[in-house]
Image (cartoon, rainbow, N blue to C red):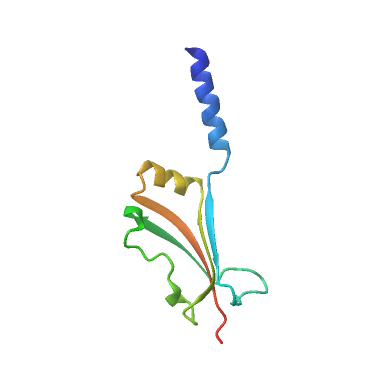
Length: 104
């Protein structure tokens, strides 16, 4: 019985030591970022997605002066992913980095 407990403890420590995160990266093909020189996102905000994102608007391009984006990065760290798993997907906290497009 003790080897099983040791194995479970070891597996738990290994699992917790590796960061469980993901990110999606969307990029408009022919656009130029407003902050293309330093690479910083124009807008960074945290968003809570409920009920698997059925009626959610994740990307809010109204915050850009040109009302369009050049790049969007959606990220989740270990704790955000853990919250998603523990609630069976009902609640998913994410971080959105929005890179606005330069006005024409």
